[in-house]
Length: 471
Image (tube, rainbow, N blue to C red; front, side):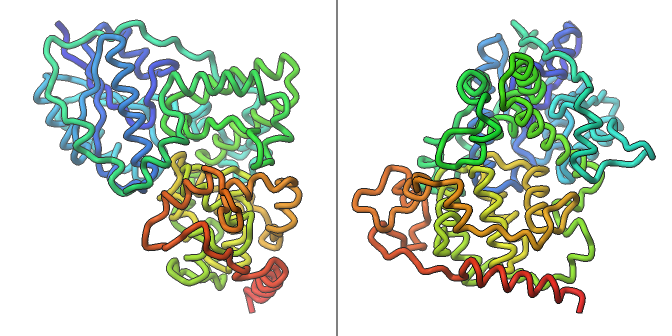
C-alpha cells in the first residue's frame, strides 16, 4: 500500500467542491484527514472558536459517512503534523491555502519544516474564486478600489464545482485522535454558548440547503431586502463561507444561474460575493489592513483608543441610547451575527459619534462574530472609519435615528432586541439578556438609557475633528 497523505483541514470544512480532496482521491493513496487545534485557532475570539468547533464536529460526521474519519490533535501546527507523519508513515501533507497574516506565517513554518525532512507539502485553492496574485491592474499592481477590481474579474470563469467523493481510501490503521469535547472550544462563551447555538446553521448539508432556500425564496428581491434588518432578506451564508462549509464557487455558480433565469437581485448578490474576493485581494497584498490604518495619514486622527471607556463600554453592551445601535449590538451578542446595514450603523456611531478607534470595534467583532472573517471584518471597519482603501469618506456620518426610520419602518427590529419598555419582551430580546455576562447587571425592567451622544451632537463633533485633523 502506498504511503498515506495527511489532509490538513482548516477553513475548508466540506466534502464537495474541494480541490485538495478531489486530487487526493485521484492518487489512490490512503487518506488521513486531520484537524489541528493550533496556534491560529487558539488565538481566535470566543464566538469564532466556538462556531469552528461545531463545524469540525459536523465534518467528522460527514467523513464517517464516506468511510473515513477526522483525526484531532492539539498543539503547534508543525509539531502536530510532524508527530502524525512519524505515526502514520505519511510522505505528504496537503492543505487549502489561507490568506491572513497569522495563518500564512503558520503555513510557511509548516512547509519549511516538513520540506526540510523530505515530506511533500502542497497547498490548494478553494477558499476564493480568484487567487489574489492572479488579478492585476494594467500596470501590474494590485487593485485598491472595488469597482475596477469587480470589472476585472466578473467576466472570468471560475470553473464548475467539483463533486463530492463517494468514498475516501482509508489507511490500514488509524492514528490516535483526541476528543473534541476535551478541547472545550466554547469555554470562553460561558453560558452564552447555548443561546448563540440556537441561531446557528452548521455544516455542509445545512449550508447547501440554506443556499437553495435563498435562491428559491429571496434572491429575487435581494437588491432591496438586503438593507432591511427587520426582515429575512439576506442569504445568511457568511457563516458557512467563513468555515468553508460551502464553497464560494458553488454560491457564485448558483447565483449566475439565478441571474440567467431573470432573478432581480442576483446581480447584487454576485457583487457581494466579489466584495469578499476584493477583501482577500487587499489583505493578501497589504496585511496591515488588520492591524493598523491602511492610510497612514489617519494615524494622526484623534480617536480614543480606550476600549474600556464609558462610551466604548456602553457601545459593546448595547446601552448607547441609540436604538438602532443597541438593537444591533444585542443581536450580535445573542446570535453571533449582525445584519450588514446594522454593521455600518454601529461602526459609524463608534468611530464618528463616539470618536473611538475602529480597532476597538474590530476586536470586539472578532470576539463576538460567529461568522468572523479576517478579511471582511478588517475591510469593513476600515471602510466605515474612512481609514482604509476605497473607504467611505469620514464626513459621511450615518444618522442612527433616520436610518432606523428608513430601514426599520415598523419598529420590528428594535422591538426584537430591546426588552426595556415592553411588557412582554420577545424571545430574541430575552436571549440577549440571558447571554450577557452577569456582571453587566442587565434586566428587562431597567430603564432604557438616554443617548450618551446624540445624533446631531456626534455628527458635529466628528466633523469638527475631521476638519482640524491636520492643524
